Length: 341
Image (tube, rainbow, N blue to C red; front, top):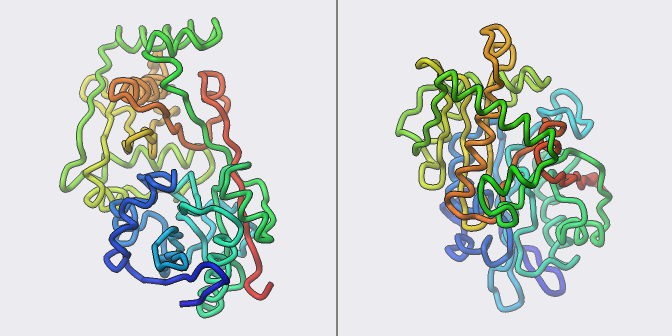
């Protein structure tokens, strides 16, 4: 249990050994209750969607031995080829790639906490024979980014995620009114055409055994944007067995055919458009007079408005569409360091 002047760290290898208070830590720390809650951590530990070769949870304790921080770390590769790792190279990273909002998840976010965590990460990585470790998907300018910079890590641009201020728009009409005229008119036209074609939208909780074939559409989307292999229908189906409490599935069908689908996660202040899929080539080939993506995104926004959370986390990629339709970009960074540094 290494100690800095103020903090010490404790490492456990499974979510079942985490201190009980870490279950409520995310809310107290202002971190995502979804990504830092035991349900998500347990699910990814048991059924990782991208290969994970080892799992370490770093708890940070203050001088009174109170747990004030949690950093989940994973030995993993670089499926998006964003970090400059060699093809088969692994690194110790926090969080997983399927987390778009990495934080120190600590009630104290100063550089001393960051230094304690980074020192522990370097030690773990050295034991694993890894050359690099660090944080991915950290919001630019966030307290975590500031703390990591103060701890000596340099940030590099990594990706962009998109959000909607649902509290500001209030309802669906308010959301449409917040868009520019041409965007508002196009959205209404797309949804009207979908309605004329008998398109149906349904929402449900995940089943005990989701059919992987209905999740193939996620693979199609990522292949179309140049990231084939980022999703696995079998792994997502297995993952959902452990995340049924906070998850909802949205399905868009036409004449009984599934044309778009999303998995969303709900926490007290946010709805996460965590994974989704549609096949634009199938839309074009079938001659549909609308894009199923418009229908899917509108269904996610309407769900967030209906349950009353203030923020929609709209996910990453497809920025042109998301910005046009009122989503705000949040730049994400990676903070990497050499293990020997």
